[in-house]
Length: 229
Image (cartoon, rainbow, N blue to C red; front, top):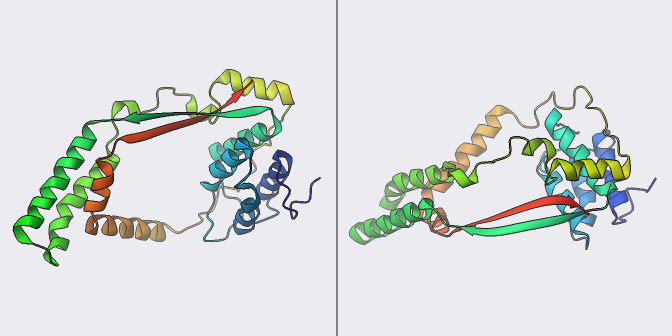
């Protein structure tokens, strides 16, 4: 087996590192530090796996593997990708919607308020309704944003069931059974989760013109999927 302490950038060494984390041999902070050697790899598959894995651990508060059953299965598919001859395909598009018009109109209205009342601390109060609108726009999901395939979560990040099956057949990969207890604890307390959520919304409301400005831009949608040859 490859020594994971040595920064060898390959699909096999990344697979060994992920397995070490899943087996409870290393904690999240150590896992994140060792992933640094892979983040700038020339292999787009390696970069994609590292970026995907980053969402499922906390790099600020140390902990051992803590995954739900569906998250564990996703990590098994990431290991399958690393053991197969897969490649990454990305489709990008620019999407305009009614949300951009609402954001632009709200931003213009804010500038009208600034023109009428001038700059000052009173804008902190006036910014509240504009911040509420901005937050509401962030939760507004139009029909094209909704997933169309009810089985997409079960095969993600593969594009189709066929690609998933081809990867299994070409490698003989066997997924590791979900162990009991790896998702039984919380990394952060519910209080801290709500605290940081409230903190984010307060800053968002105070600085509402800035997120509104970005919300006037078209949505750049990028869909990345794993394909087999």
